Image 1 (spheres, one colour):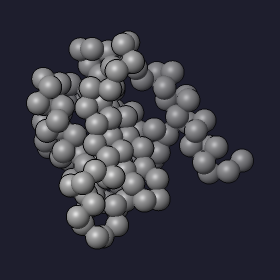
Image 2 (cartoon, rainbow, N blue to C red; image 1 turned 45 degrees about the vertical axis):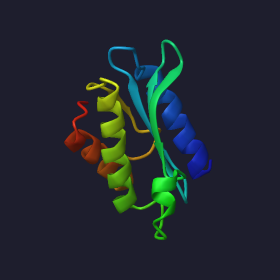
Image 3 (tube, one colour; image 1 turned 180 degrees about the vertical axis):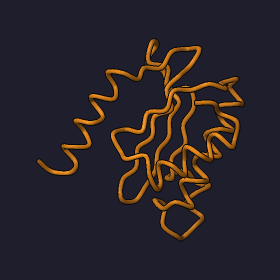
Image 4 (tube, rainbow, N blue to C red; image 1 turned 90 degrees about the vertical axis):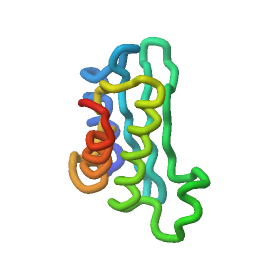
Length: 118
């Protein structure tokens, strides 16, 4: 079994336990080799309430890597700002099957410092 398949299986197990509601939406995180994505999702209605992606123009200016810990800090801070702008203070964290370490931990800590509670 490849590492990708193992991560997907972990994510399936995690999604059975973690679900977002309108009162407490899910903060879903995904990263590839080049980009980081964070979304605040209401699973009941199936709507994305706020999102940040390193393919946005604000990240394109920076010529450095778009999938490192420093960028994850920026994404976490920005998703917290966008969530709070839409009156979302409490979320459920969905790490997407990734280990809570490195980029995932940096993004989560920055989102907490930005004002999100989870």
